[in-house]
Image (cartoon, rainbow, N blue to C red):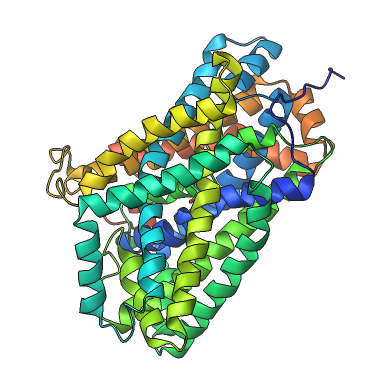
Length: 470
Ligand code: PHE
């Protein structure tokens, strides 16, 4: 058995701490803000089905692979990949996989923080009773006025970035572990409450039908890619966030069980959010494809009409901010860990530096909703016709960089790394469970990512097979 490496950044206090932190990373804006609006934009049921299949067959196996690589390498993803490539006698080029992850994390955080800023602002809007008795038009106009004001978006984005960098500067243990302990249960309770409200609203059936009746004639090749990309995004995969958290994981924790727990919790939160939102959409004659504003244009209606809505609304947005916070930290952790390891910076310096660069890049997103809202940089490519700068950043990271990262993580874990090493590290023997994982990571993940990519470019076409829209 090889000598076990240790992380210089410290480690989690135990399995529970890791589960909490990784769940905190996974559960975020992706589940509550993004999932409903992209499901709405891509026709509902068929999209949700593709997403669920991707979580089970790609997401969970890749999560296991990432945790495994992280725990074996015990460094930032860049250095982990370099060390493990050396160990396997493979090329140094593998460290660029770590680099792509750092870049993806930083780009994602640049817009993630702007949206988290919306959630922050909505805490105060809900608490002030602004939504009391509101109509659909009223809520739409509040949202429009808010996002139309670049100064406001900038201020909230700045506040969220500062909050994130403070926690990152303090390191993995303090704060982070504690925050998640009440966050996930709290989110469940409030989402269940909103689901109860939706259930009583009279349009619950319609919402469920939209989400869970697959109709492939409503989804395009690009929609399939978006569903797959979201499986990576929502589980924080393909960029090293889970890898770097895995590097702080104590030995002898079951990676398989842990990964399944996290994926199930994450999926449950997304489903609860979708089931709360779509009934409200249909009840109020709103547009399921309304885009990134969807939850900010629907949930305030529920809060505006339920007893105690100001309190519950404020609480809901507080929890959403916390969920975003624990995800944001993991987006920048790979970069910060690398700056500490290779540039000799202290955690505080590294955090400030990474924070400033990310904050500045966030301006691209801030302006996408106001000053540049009519700017469509790639309008000459048909699928990007209506994409703003923010939409493009999101597309590039979630639908291209993360699946590409996942593809290479799979190739590394199942083709480059020695099989004996993964047997040892996953620590579940060489039985059926291991073989299932190995088969999925070795064949299914790389093939699926490749096919979905090729399908979008039109080089292969399985739309007729499934009866998909063109
Ligand atoms: N999983 C997070 C969410 O759903 C976003 C995220 C993506 C975090 C990639 C880390 C890495 O909100």
